[in-house]
Length: 207
Length: 198
Image 1 (tube, rainbow over the protein chains, first blue to last red):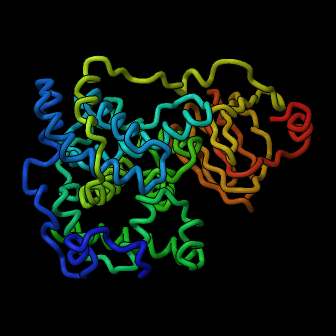
Image 2: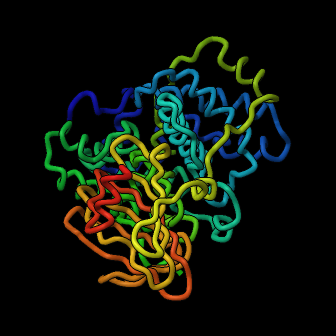
Image 3: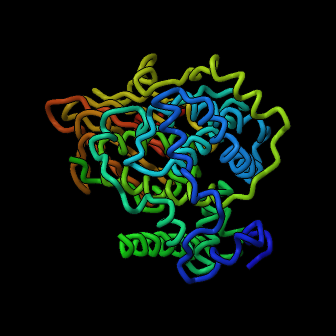
């Protein structure tokens, strides 16, 4: 595995590249988690909760923006956190974790930033966030529990994890990932597809 | 009831943020009506969330938290163009009872995005593409050689496919289509395409 694609800190590496299921890689997730803070913001406009959430997530969001090579990672991190504050009432803890929800906001902020840069109008990016239809299937998805997801990701092979990470973090079209890993496009697609299937199976096993 | 769904790969690209804007909008119309694909995107976003959680902490500017706290009372949603607004304005007639509206300001570089409208029983122009087309039905229904598609149904066609959709009787069919690379229209529509540069 190319050094550029290994996990960024030594402390995090072992659980993610080992095949054994991991419980938790780092300490913070043992706390209330991002979702609890988002709910406090939504129900009480809780500024202390926002502060705590900022300290928890903003450094990670910035790391994500740096990885995606956006122009102004600090600015976009601010935008993401303010969007979290504005949209908190739309977060539904029965649909997924706070981290997953914030990931979606961070992803959309990257898209907005690219559109602003070339003077294109912003568009509605998340039809699932704006209301009723999504609530109809509100059910606790075992698959979205962050511990389960992270444990399942520990069950992926190194190669599988690599294509998953490249897809999610480096904003690479699958064809660019293929070039970068020096693999045929079909191999990247099938590897990603297998990784996703394996994740799904691992999550269902635990459920 | 949605019956035609995107590829699993397409959902991964959607969740990860790798799809171009036009294709995202097409997927968005489908996701509004399709609980199964919404659940799948939810699972994929959970993967994104877990990766985000595992990120190392980047150093923030020293005043980052203060700036955010000071902005809480005056932050507002930016203006966004809705799909409904995109349907307004000039449509280009293309054959009898059918029209196209290019959304070139909305599309990303390297993709073409169109709204397509055909009255019941009317054909949309026969066409092929140089790249992949993703098309979703917004209202009404259409039929082609591979099936019948209603609201929310999403069809992904490769560059090799040529097809001629026909709107089903009784209702105007409105679709949103995103194509990688230019669309190759046939016959008169091709002439219109040349002259009108759509």
